[in-house]
Amino acid sequence: MRHLLILVAAVSALAGCRPREPIVARVGSLTITQGEFQRKLLEVSQAYQSYVVTPNGRRQFLDILIREKMILAAANASEIKRSAEFKTQMAKLRAEED
Image (cartoon, rainbow, N blue to C red; front, side, top):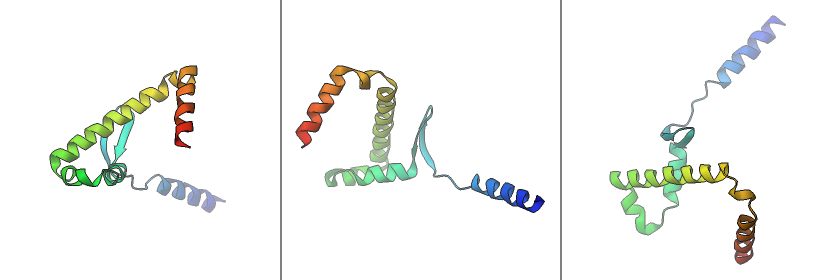
């Protein structure tokens, strides 16, 4: 039984030691990981690819992602999603997509 407890403790300790993805930006509790940043870069249109590979372009793109995360967090924390007007507008958008 003692060996089993030691094994469980070792596995638990190792599970907590997994390497985490590097964080490229942090604002409060919000983070943007390197992987997320790379995935978002791939979504940029071909016309802007040459700009976002430059240091200034990457920094500007990261600033945009930070603002996007902050806006989404604020929207999720607000009561807007529960309002009748929001639900009506979302229903219209969904109908237009079909």
